[in-house]
Length: 82
Image 1 (cartoon, helix red, strand yellow):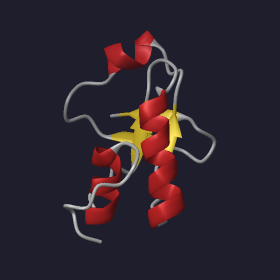
Image 2 (spheres, helix red, strand yellow; image 1 turned 180 degrees about the vertical axis):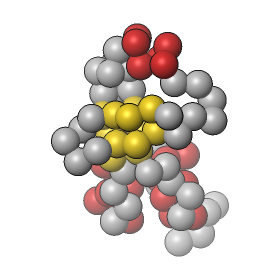
Image 3 (cartoon, one colour; image 1 turned 60 degrees about the vertical axis):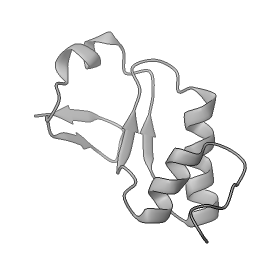
């Protein structure tokens, strides 16, 4: 599929999945927004690219994570920073 083709829905997340540079996980301090949810679902359904998604992590999560920190998402949804 050509990158110039217009397709419905959030383009950036789909484009990342299509190019093979999608994130391994998306973590949200609050509720996931509908646009991000659409991109994640489309990447999974249309391109077969699963992205682990966890929301409602809270403000403590934002305070703990800094740019460049390693973050590990465990099978049970537990998030490990550092």
